[in-house]
Length: 68
Image 1: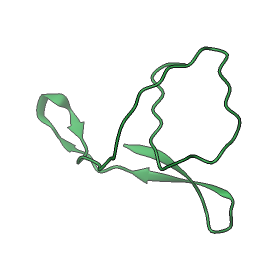
Image 2: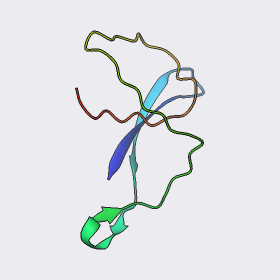
Image 3: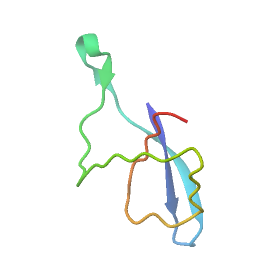
C-alpha cells in the first residue's frame, strides 16, 4: 500500500513523495501493516460548501477522506 507524503522542504517549498507501507498477511482480514505511533485522533465533518484555503498544517497528520 502507498500513501502520499506532502511536506515542506528546507527550501520552504512543498514536496510530495510516495511512501510504501509494508503489509503482511492477516488471515481472513487480508493484509495489514504494523501499527504506527500516534498522539491522538479526531474525526470531523464539514458541509458541502466548506473550503479551506492553502495553509501550513499545525502538526504532522494523516487525512483520510471517507466520502466526497
